[in-house]
Amino acid sequence: MASSTPALRVTGLSKSYGATVAVHPASFALRPGSVTGLLGGNGAGKSTTIGMIMGLIAPTAGSIEIFGRDFLQDRYAALGRMNFESPYVDMPHRLTVRQNLDVFARLYGVADPKAKIAELAASLALTEFLDRPSGRLSAGQKTRVALAKALINDPELLLLDEPTASLDPDTADWVRSRLEEHRRRRNCTILLASHNMAEVERLCDRVLMLKAGRLVDDAAPAQLLARYGRNNLEEVFLDVARGRAGAA
Ligand SMILES: Nc1ncnc2c1ncn2[C@@H]1O[C@H](COP(=O)(O)OP(=O)(O)OP(=O)(O)O)[C@@H](O)[C@H]1O
Image 1 (cartoon, rainbow, N blue to C red):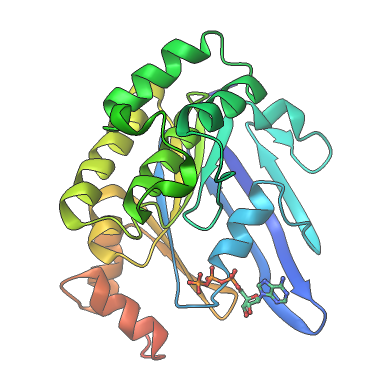
Image 2: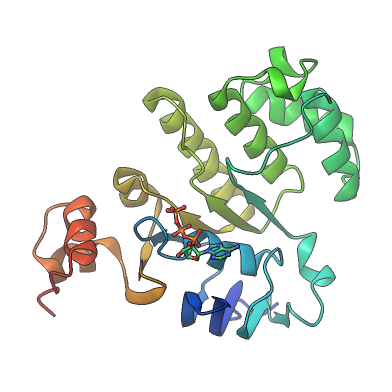
């Protein structure tokens, strides 16, 4: 893949549920190795957008290219090189953490599942939970298991839906460091939906703002601060949500 090829390009991507337009036609491309925040209030269309890019939700219109190939025509070329994390996707409760991760390792064709699970458990502080049924974990522990699942195939494209929801501030900070490490090591492209503005300011070099299903802004965090004349993204978010236009 030429380095100029975006890791992800969506063109005119939209989703309607009957008369409800969850995502109006949106177009954007992500540079390999970049970290992009997807921001918007409740119901703005973040999860629907990520769900379409993962192949979990059929778009109403538009195209998705991943690593330069049409994802809607041939998703299998890309699926092995990408992964997804959401605190809302649960794993079978009776299987242990190790068993669940082993299923995913085999689905992704990981060469040495045992070694990979041990490595991820060590880096995500999960070793002591590996043999516990997944249903008997706290919300924060489940989030770390979900992250281990998301990293099991060393993805080059990672879609994260509120990756630190339910984590305490210390653990959330530490998980962000793991994500930054993975991005550096793999030159991984990350698209991150989050309600945590400090997280977005720390991790993201670009922010896409969704409002009621429409892409209303697309800029680097510093550009957004300048455009809205604000000191932090939380204030920009409130301006967008409450319909106060930016200075530009
Ligand atoms: N299966 C569905 N059927 C009908 N409408 C849906 C469905 N899924 C989502 N929607 C609607 O689509 C819109 C976008 O929802 P989505 O879950 O993508 O928002 P979100 O930005 O992820 O919100 P949140 O921050 O609350 O998680 C909302 O109006 C929602 O009610």
